[in-house]
Length: 336
Image 1 (cartoon, rainbow, N blue to C red):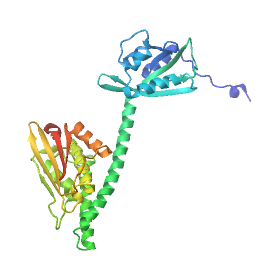
Image 2 (tube, rainbow, N blue to C red):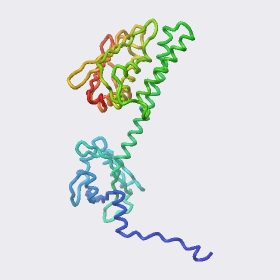
Image 3 (cartoon, rainbow, N blue to C red):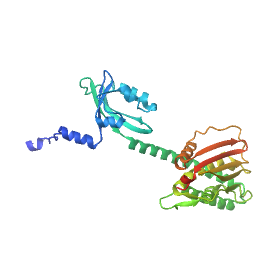
Image 4 (cartoon, rainbow, N blue to C red):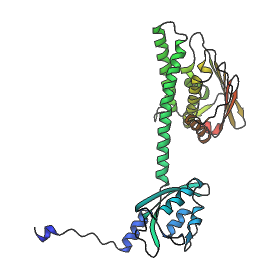
């Protein structure tokens, strides 16, 4: 074999200037941890990342005060463990900068590998964007799982509801098909496709479309009554409000007034200054003997939707005759 073939290509020489440019391009923050006194030396980017004024050294305890309380003990234990665990490590945690929460990833090597003068070396990275994307994906997955379970429960409830007034199999089939079709239209409002929903809809029309699948059409016609103020609902608010109404209707079909042949639902509204209250009042369903604890995903989801997208809050009143929910919203947010 010739020398030309046997010779391995040489790795490029990385000068200090090249490494500095690479670190700046990647926005990597550098740190060294003096293991004997728990002091950190950090570059300017690291101090900026932590929201701290520059200093020659900073103690581990000083840094810990900025770590999110829920992560603090975990991070302390993890850093201590790196002294005895070989190989590379990566610790992700939150820090608090006033009202802002930022995610940081600390990376290095454990078991004192590469220690120089009793100091370990590593980097900090701002991974806030990645963590927010992961949280968004987890929320979406949870929401979709919850939505599928709800749709199956609704289909069962609508089948039972339709069967109460059906005169024949053919009549029941037609009625159920109409209800499921209406449910599909309502679901499109909850999760609209781009360009398929107008900029605004009337509040009463929106509620009527959302609640149409649950109303009786024969002997029990008119179980659901909607009487609300005439006002427009913007596209973003319509999606959030539809999600809330969809969740309340699902729970009513499973547990509330719409699960009972003699149950009724009234949806009304009243104006309060620059806000509007939507009142969801159930009657004629199963008696409520105790107030349930709202800890499910759906309850948390709609509470967050009302707060974040409608500028308001949900108030539950568990009366013996039926549930009354007051949905307080900002008129400005509702029009958005």
